[in-house]
Length: 155
Figure 1 (cartoon, rainbow, N blue to C red):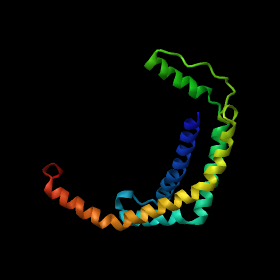
Figure 2: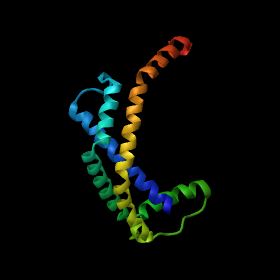
Figure 3: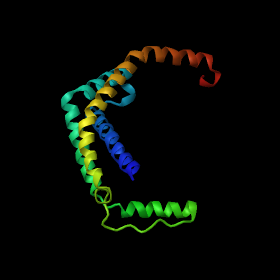
């Protein structure tokens, strides 16, 4: 059950920054293929290391986590049961229709707070990685160009 809770929370944590990045690209209106990759990484790194952005994302992901903890899990278990029956031929045990992650795993209520506390550190690390990739971008482009000339399938 702990793995299910962590997987759900991790998905929410990853989805929030991606949706915000997509929203910003749409707002700018410039097609992605016309943008310089290093500018994308630089802007991304700055956003991920901005304390205001970190607080906003952490609060948003915490809120999403609270909502996820209170969603009924019976439909999810029913879908998993159908897959299980198809794969193993065994039915899953029935689940209370009012069951939520918060009800079946009371300690899961701490997860949104933990995510809110730790997400800024993770975003800061993502910003650092983006800066490193930005530094490596010219070398990677040169390597790709060399590979294109060396590899016959790439032409």
